[in-house]
Length: 176
Image (spheres, rainbow, N blue to C red):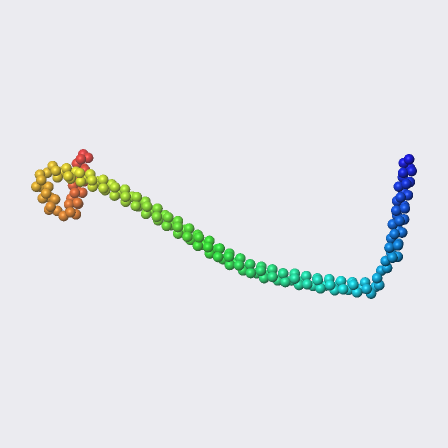
């Protein structure tokens, strides 16, 4: 049975090839090729059209290339200008940073001096208050007429100097 099936398949193949060959020959007989002059003229027109298209394409490419070169030169010049400006800005930034650092250091020194002066002022105020208390107690212990005459006989500045000297003596005396 297999042999019969194989023979049937082979017969179909042969008949199909014969049919295709006969159909192809009939097509050639029905269609005749155009004459050489028409084919040549069409080919020339196509070739001319292709040359024009190619020439236009090359022109467009050339124009684009020239534009790109021009843009590249412009961008290159801008880039150089920006590099120069960037360098100047970096130098200015470094200068300003240095200036800021020195001003910060100076400000810190001034703050330190101000704190020291405030501390000194507080010490002096405390000393003046202490000496004033001692003077008041001293004047209160002296007879009233002597205290008044001492007070009125000296100027205010002179009195302050004497008060400080007296306060220093009292401080030494009270510390002993």
